[in-house]
Every structure is written in C-alpha cells, then in structure tokens.
Image (tube, rainbow, N blue to C red):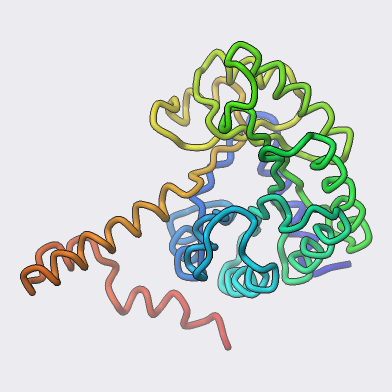
Length: 273
C-alpha cells in the first residue's frame, strides 16, 4: 500500500457531511508551507498560480512534467494532504490525462480537480473514468473533484444554470467523481439548490459577493476554495512594491507585513534536500 494512503483517507474525511473544508490555494512550496502554518487542513493548488509561477499562462498550457515537478516540491515540504488542480488534464485523450494524474499520485497527491470547461460533458466523463481506474491501480483512494463551468462561462441561460449543473453532476458522479466544484456560483438560493440536488460534496470558489463561510456551511457547502485570489493578491503586492521602489528608491511599505527572514528560512529547515 502507498505511503500516502493515510493522507488520502484524511483528505476524503475532510469532505464529510457537517464539515466545510476551507482551502487557501497555494502555488509553490513557500506558499504551501505558509498556508499549512496558517492552520489549513489540506493544501490545494491553484492551476493559474502554478502556471504563472513556472512561466506559463493558465488554461491547460503548462507541460505536465513541469506541473509534476512543481507539485513534488510542494508535497516534500508539507505534512498535510495535497490536492492538485489539473485543469482539463492537459490532454483530450483520457489515457494521457490518466497518465498525468498517475504521475501526480506517484509523488504523493491524494486529490485532483478536473474541469469540463467549454467541452461536452462526455469528454470529462471519459477523463474521470480513466483517472479513477488509474487511481484504483495505484492503490490510492484519490478524491476526484469534478469542476463544471456552467456558471463561470455562462454555458446556458441563467434560469437553466442550476438544472444543467445538476445534470452534469449526475453524469460525472456515475463516471466516478467524488465532488462537484461550481466556480462562480454565489447566490444563496442557487447554492442551496445545488447542495439539495446532488449527493456529491459541493465546492464553491471565493469571489466578490460570496456569502461568508458560516453561511455557506449552513447551506451545506462542504468545500470552499480561494482559487487564484491569494496568488493574484500577492502578485499585485509585488507589482506595487516594485513600482514604488523604482519610482523613489524608498522603502515605503516594503517591510510592512513582511514575514521575517528567519521565520521564512525556518519553514524549510527540517524539510531535507
């Protein structure tokens, strides 16, 4: 049995009825260690943050080998379960998607997100089934979170969004997924209807206008993801500080809120080579 079987079991347990797993998404080893230190129960990556940190745009562009290398560094430095946003799997062929996910499993990943995007639901169904079969062969009880972009991309008129999402959820569940991720769903009535309409744990994404965590928990939401928000905030701060330094040579704001050098360095003192 894989050494990561216990982490897989713990990660699945974090989605139990009555719990709401909050994931401040990370994008590299340092952000993952900081998220862990802040008290997170698990690490989830943001696909866009990982892509940007490695010099690629978001959108199924980053080479799988680069993704796996980045995730390997994250797994090495944390002691909590790691789940990876694998976008559309970086291929249309389900077999190739399964190969990428198997490579992630091999370095210690216990959960993945796979999305439909603008593709037909049949495509994600085939990918989920292939990934589930690969996970079974690996001996890891991988948590497969199926993301549908019905709300995010406006794939159907607003009055049909809930029904279309639930129809896809049923298909993705039958294909072997374990959770349903619906980014851009923010209206409490829509969220309540989604939770009531599927047995899958429902995952929403932080965005302006999203109800507070306590309200989401009361609605039955079992997973809340920051998505790219923290990475975008960090990059925005980087740009502002760099612009100020270049403009006047001063240190205005440069040290405000900064994590001390010794503390950051100490995060990695026991992680080995």
